[in-house]
Image 1: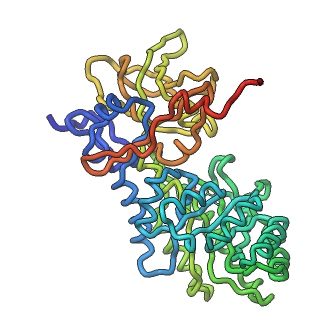
Image 2: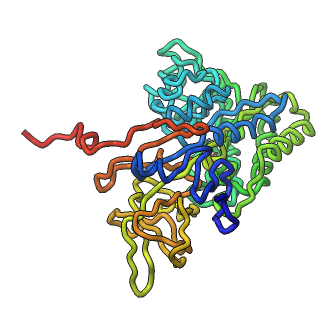
Length: 430
Ligand SMILES: *Cc1c(COP(=O)(O)O)cnc(C)c1O
């Protein structure tokens, strides 16, 4: 039997498909994987990671662009190793993320360090590693970085994260380029901040950056931001401050359901066209894509525990919860839900797919038409970005295992946490 037209299509997931009525990641059947390794289980496709990176690489061609994977989206070492191997740099937001980059042999000279609250030890570690650039978000941070650079005797390469005050038309929690956000330096104050940076010892100005938001499905906010950054670069040049690179951050959206996000090629073509038109075609570009490199390279497998019906609703209570995948709870985010072995022996009903955690906000999907029975395995789609990295232990729930599929083989790239792991480090009073 081959897959029939009645099987659901997974939006945006070319490396996950039905074969003989069973959902596969590349050549690996996900029903057996779930039974052998247990659920909840994150499953990534190596080919999907490669394809997503290739999509950027092909769009770049010969142009001077560095892709720094926004690794807070998925920082599993196996994922990072794959990107490092393909030549990517990394956008880090903590000393912990730097440690992960170094652990997989990533090139520190391709690392940019973002974040509004960098501590001294994080600055020191990054200076000693020799990162490409600190993306600085305030004048207070400039002063701290200058002090740390002097103490270590190392020069800090800096870019100022400018807040261009553009509306990215995305969810408020993932929009970062508006005035009311905590991120970046207001564009009107940027020139002064650059002049301060130029006057402080231990700092070398190398760039300008911004990151206007996430899950952008409209390309125009990038160009609005770019126009403002080019204005700034020209004002800086008049003040005698020249820069080597322009960093436009991450933010390209992915398809969760029916979105049609802009492609890396559309973004890059548009950016270089504008740079050339204004005489800045020589500038090096940095991009920090996170979600668009990993989001649709992963699913979260979960098993139906109980079906529960009341007057108002049908609930599928599953073994994954908000502690495993926080996005629905945090952003009311939509994730597709697909049965791993679709059944024809019972009618579809409208279900809310919910976890066992004691919170009404603990849901993974609402009002989905599914034909279900107990013990069925479901794939929560588009779970490769901001999934496992946001997992926690609420309700003393061990964190899920992670698996990377490679052709017809798979590798456990993170062991399932044990209950003993959860109690380690705690103690009662003597
Ligand atoms: C989160 C983040 C990224 C990655 O964003 P995506 O929307 O996942 O592409 C890039 N840069 C910075 C500064 C970030 O905070």
